[in-house]
Length: 268
Ligand code: SAM
Image (tube, rainbow, N blue to C red):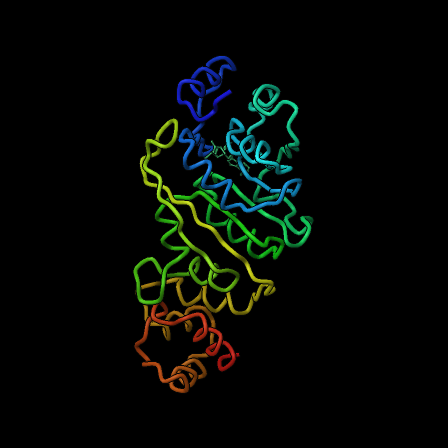
């Protein structure tokens, strides 16, 4: 069965009395070339486990399994259970019926692999959870291009913010390819991108991210005012900025990850 054919997907949905559900961000990938790119980027050895979120009709799941991976896939839409008896039959796939945001990612073995065409409405919190879990050595995610740009943004750009710093802190990230709406059925309104992340083994740093969150909570404010609003001592904050040779008028978006780390040391 060729799940990358829009006709096959349409027939499958019809036969099982299903409709792509917007609430679940259901846009199914129907371009084989992009599917192959994701499978290649996942970089598993035969028999290795790949974790996936949102298998949908099982398109990526099946491609991963056929290429030799064992797949553990987390899906929330129980209506899809019947479809898998057909699309994932006899493949080494385990489905966990759960909200991926509620799944215990700490239970995953260290150095695991992840691949997923993510439901766009939960992409940012999910990527944050996956990175914070410290369980993955590589993650390949298909997200809205806008999210991909935020993930890979550098200081001083409009896309730079909390997500960019979260990604930079935990991983090296590369946007590897953009996908037009027509690569999906039904087509979404936006362009999408595949991002490949190679996480390091640094543990989460809650105090640092509290500071970064406060810095970006009100983007229009100066960093000093944003920190004050976030409950930090304004005098300490001013002295810290002076020590780092930063203007008292600087905005959070101008600071690199390293500068935030230095700021935290001076402000605590
Ligand atoms: N992987 C498939 C593909 O490439 O064609 C489908 C991807 S579709 C963009 C997103 C999938 O995530 C849907 O199957 C949807 O039901 C599922 N989903 C949505 N929210 C979820 C959640 N919170 N936890 C787990 N799965 C979710």
